Length: 168
Image (tube, rainbow, N blue to C red; front, side, top):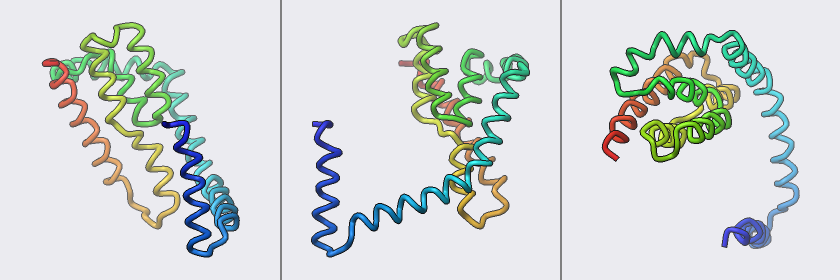
């Protein structure tokens, strides 16, 4: 079924453009042109985020961060092994999936850590990555509060997730 979904969608779009008497090819090329502008706009922000995250990892700040917050997060029911996933997921969805795979191989999918990590990876958002994309094309200049709220809600959902996973 899924193998036919994309071709069916393309045929539907072409038939709809014929019905509406619009030029589908021109619409496609105009959309492609505007995506280049978006890429050029967000590229410096993405490079900065990726560079900062790489510095964070190479400098072993991730280990210091995990060790420092482990007692507090442990009190909230979040295992120390998940701290790096929580941090990575806020920057990169793909990085979060790679960390999830590592945790599942190490601890198993049916373990408490594996269950928590799976739900965290599936439900939390790459806040900084999404913020770069959205705010690079808007006129919002003060987005610190918005990012803080997004991080806070991610954190609350992680606490609730780990509490629920204790009973599963």
